[in-house]
Image (cartoon, rainbow, N blue to C red):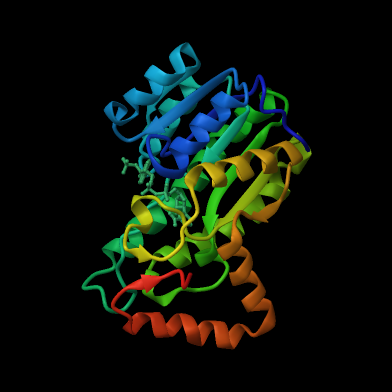
Length: 254
Ligand SMILES: NC(=O)c1ccc[n+]([C@@H]2O[C@H](COP(=O)([O-])OP(=O)(O)OC[C@H]3O[C@@H](n4cnc5c(N)ncnc54)[C@H](OP(=O)(O)O)[C@@H]3O)[C@@H](O)[C@H]2O)c1
């Protein structure tokens, strides 16, 4: 199920900065007819509206708010590609945190937000000929990272959901791509030392995955290394990641 980017109508959640912003620019550069920039605060996407002119439509869209998802779907009836990029990482531990609030919030955005978007836009994608959903996931959804607390379980859940949604939407011709992302130079990874990928490189690989209708791809070297380490010796990988709990700074090791 291949999807052309030129002429497509894309919606990117969390499109105001980081990887989402890079996706917005990549769609525009590749000739998308329109890009909806989902953002919690429309003021934060004003620069993209200026860059993209009448091809950019900014939408107030907090994916943790079902009413805002419904309102976005009511407006964006012409969408053919949905990029579920919005993500929350609150840097807490599962047991060490005082409450479960951070873990719940991460699940609300990274899992329920993504699921809510898929449910709201599935009929729209169907009406527009099939199209594509891209879920921006993480190596933390391939191997549990204890230092990431509730983030890792939320990405595991989103990855499993991606597999199930792909099966459910196959008959309507919608491709569902899980992008497994390593470490990228954005605000979310500001606490991580070492080499990080550029957001624009993740977006470029994401667009190529949409064009091919890929099911799941590793977007970068770290993502590939994590998967290789899991295949080689999963217990050694888990022990190595557990040691990160005692480290003062987290590093990509490069
Ligand atoms: N950076 C990495 O190393 C890395 C690695 C693997 C996966 N990822 C994934 O990549 C995606 C993008 O993250 P990033 O690296 O670009 O981080 P980022 O710069 O922190 O951007 C996160 C984006 O998500 C938005 N967001 C957060 N909660 C939201 C909500 N409830 N509703 C709508 N938007 C919300 C933020 O909006 P505001 O500006 O309003 O806060 C922001 O636009 C996430 O899904 C993340 O898990 C990142």
